Length: 263
Image 1 (cartoon, rainbow, N blue to C red):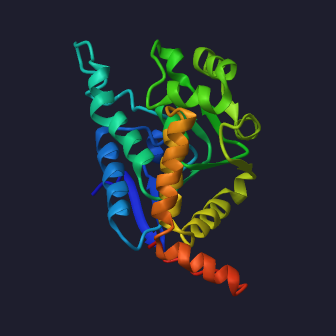
Image 2 (tube, rainbow, N blue to C red):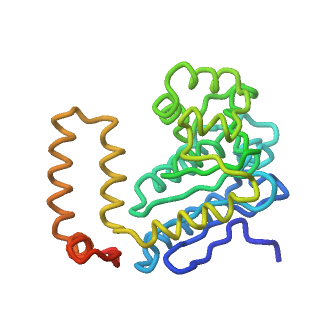
């Protein structure tokens, strides 16, 4: 039997999801798309999961689309790439952004094309020093997808977004951190431990509050200030009724570390 294209296992409150096509630099085929979406859905539906860690097997994080996938390169036919985007990439990015859990992504090696934008859809991205983020679409006459044209200008500004998208030059892990493209760059041999530590920490935090924070940050990109102030009011009202808020206040008064349950 062939190896599964995605590995998924829970360790405490962390669901670790690993892209597992190292022989193809973890490039996407239909099977890996469906397996990744299933793993994310399982994490969202498991009340014991309070954070997700996304990483990859082998020397690359993800090289984007597998160009040898039959649906992408049908013999003797012109492909409809829009169908692949609509059926696979758009649902995946929407699923990650809407996940009511913090998602930590550990990028080691190359993250190219949709692989780069998959990482950028996550909440907190760590990269090894040897990581490379490449908007490779321009090399084959395509447009950045998987949210790339949305995320890049918001993360690094218009000038750097245009340079990345039009030139397709690699951006190192250190450059990515300096530019604000990702949260942090660490040494390669520290990446796995640091990502696991960060995910484990998030799994002990007030999950509902983190989910509401994700919602507020995402919505701020389209809201007016007045709309955002109203949203903050409504979310804060809801969070003030959670068990985690009560625990946080009590623990503060008792000068102890709070024990959050995600409720």
